[in-house]
Image (tube, rainbow, N blue to C red; front, top):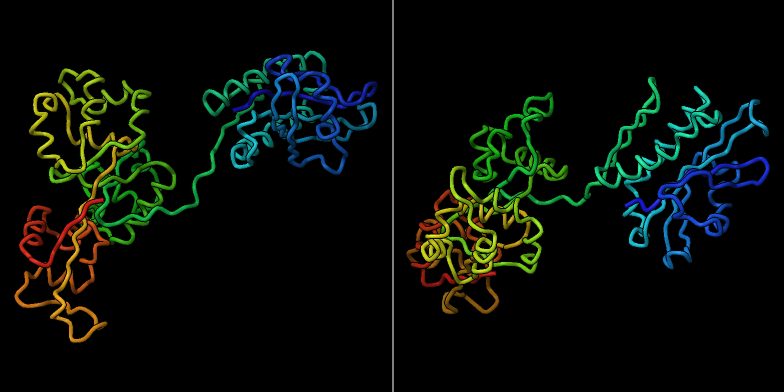
Length: 404
C-alpha cells in the first residue's frame, strides 16, 4: 500500500524542493532533506528506478521510497533543463522488494506520462496547470490503494491511466486427471474471444463437477493438452483445483476456519440454493467445525439432514475447499504380501498372488497400491466408481487403508 506520494523538483534558488505530497505533511522537511540527494539525483541516474529505505523520526518507523527521476532538456528552462521526481512511499511492511515490484511499472509510466505532458503542453512549467498536481497525486494514491487502478482526466486531450498488475507465481501447479477445476472468474469472455482453440473447447465443460479426465473426454481434447490449458487458467488466477465431491469423502476443518467470519455474506450466498431460506451464518460455521476425519460425508449429511436441507452440500464443501477453511482427508490403499511368497530375501514382491480381482492385478502391475496414490487417482485410472473399488480392495486380504 502506498503511504504517501510526492512530487519533488530541483529549484534554481534553493536546490532540491519538496513541492507537493499526499497526504499533506506525511514527509517532514527534515526527512526530505536527509534523502534529497537520492530523490533529486545526478543526471546519469535520471530515467532509472531509484529506491531506498529511510527512517522517519516522526513516525518512528523505516519506510521505503521509490522514485523515477526525469530530466528534460530545453532552452526555455533556467539551467536549460528541468529535473523532477514523482515518488511513492511504502510502509515498513513493504521493505521486501517483491512486495513493491508491482508498483515499479506504474511509477515508471506515471513519470513518463508527466514527462510527455511537460514536453507537449508545459504542464509542469506553467503555474496554472501545475497547481492541479496535489489533486492528481491524491487521486492516484486513493485509486491504486483502493481499486488497484485509476483514470484521471488532466484536460480535454490528456488522461493518466494507471493499473497494478501483480506478478503471478512462477510455480507450476500439477493438474492430475482426477482433479476438478472450479471457476473463480467468469470465463465466458475467453470462450467468445480469439484465444487458444483448446481453451475454447474445454471452458464449457469446466462446471465444478467434471474432473480433468472427464473434461478431456467430453470436449474430445487430448488429456495432456487439457491439463496444460487448465494450468494456464490456474496461473492467471481464473480457476482453482478441488477434489471431486463424493458422499464417501471425508473432510476436516483447518486452522483457517477462524477467517470464515471475514466473508460471512459471501459464504451464505454461495452455499444457499436459489429459492431456499438461508441458514444463519453461525450454523454454517458450526457445520464446518463438525466435519471430522472419521466421518464420511454421507453420514454427516444423514446426521445433519434438517440443516443441510437448506444448503447445497456440494457448494458447502466447495466453498470450504476453495478458501482452505477445510481440507480433504484422503484414503490411501496399500497392498502387502506374505513373506512366504518371496523367492528370497530382498527379491521384489510378485505382481499377483493367487486368484485376485482384475482391478487389483492392474493396479499392482502399475505400482499404484504402494500407499502413495489416493483413491480418487485410482478410480480415475480404472474409470470405476469409488464404492465399487473400495469394496473390491477391502475384499482382498492383503489390502489395507490409511487416511491423511
